[in-house]
Image (cartoon, rainbow over all chains, first blue to last red; front, top):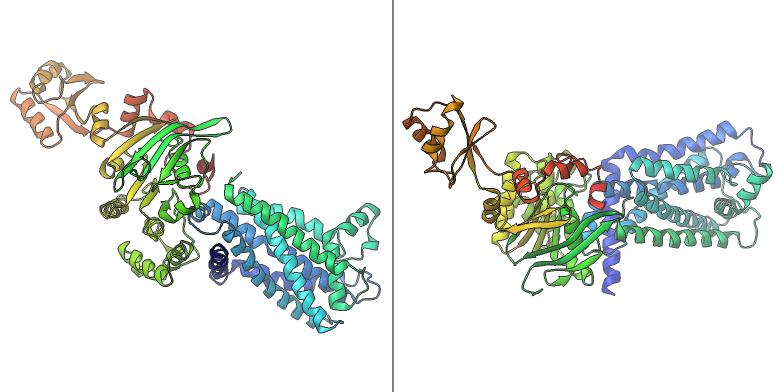
Length: 258
Length: 335
């Protein structure tokens, strides 16, 4: 039990450390505040008129998709931070301390949950101003927000692994974007999957981002989806978390930089 | 034996792919002493420190620190050691006090203790005035002091310092030496790696010279210097023809008969004090003019040249630049 309580307190100590950085080096703040606003506005007003979304206004169609996309990028702070910790010798210091082996990674990913929450709040506010309206019971909306945070947390662990395996913060960021950009675009996030050419459509249908976005449309807008879509989205999130947490902690223990 | 020595390594081996970093290294340090690991970059010093601080498992051999096996009892051992690496491993976006408190919490010190120790250490390291400033506003010397303070937060019985003064200005260097000496007086055992003989000379009770993954010599500073030949004077005469007369005049006070090397008369001396005055007086008595007299001390290069037959730079050329403290070269530590 002592081990568990140390793991928890170590994680909180390190999550606090990650969060303290944000007001002190406000460059990162832009990526969870201004960037989501710009994304919502650009998509809503630039593409909105050109994309046909049967049954929904484009802003209603867009909001679940664009928030999911933002969640999938939110963890880049973890990649950036871990890559810096490695480079500056902090990982060595932490590894020489009697702290829990997963605490540095858990601390960083937990801090992402806080910044992701801020992003969600800002995006929903901007969305509502731009004409977005919920069409679901409150319990669904709350469940939807929890699903967003869970999904974002899963991707924080993907970024944790990226941060521990890439040679510099810049490389970590580039690698993250190269993987996640196509993943979010070839999905139901911004356009109906049916509008894509054959091969892309096949990929989009099995893409976990599509599953999560569809689940969100159900939870926020009452959209008709397959019976298990919400549970599939939860399962994907938990599965990604488990796989990448295991990979990352293993990597951290060895701290092999390249 | 393991519980009598604070640090004991036997036959440590470690390779990274084809590169052999440690090739059977033995180290011993009794409690309350300073063991200096002296060698050029790439010699294996950092690898040894990483194994002894549980960061890296050895491929072969065994090591005990504070009586604990570095592999099997790693988790317990981490609570009893402090490590200050080659880079100031402190968080730039925290204040000095926050950095030390964070480390104290991660050592699982009792409640209230992290804050108290942070204040105590900041004062001892002359950082009280900067305690609440973000570390990114600190100078290099201040960061190094904070880094060392972080290694001391748990008051660990065994302290590992990997090139603690590399890149520091002479004043900060002296300050750090004094701090380390104070810890040792209080009973801390220190393993210190360095590229500088004078640093090992000042701080270490015993020195292990390490080159290409092997300990090539071990002993006290005096014993090592004897192997290298101690100090000498390089005397430039006004006229080279006087060399024989000069050598004869100096022979009595020299450790051995002085000889000409590269047009300079090289005179091994017994002791530093008064050596120059004595040499000048004796040459003056026989009427020989002097252009220049310089006291020379053995450098790391001399130790290397004597012990290995190759200069330290050769080994360095395979490693990484000596003065390169760019934290970007993480590869060095993990190669």
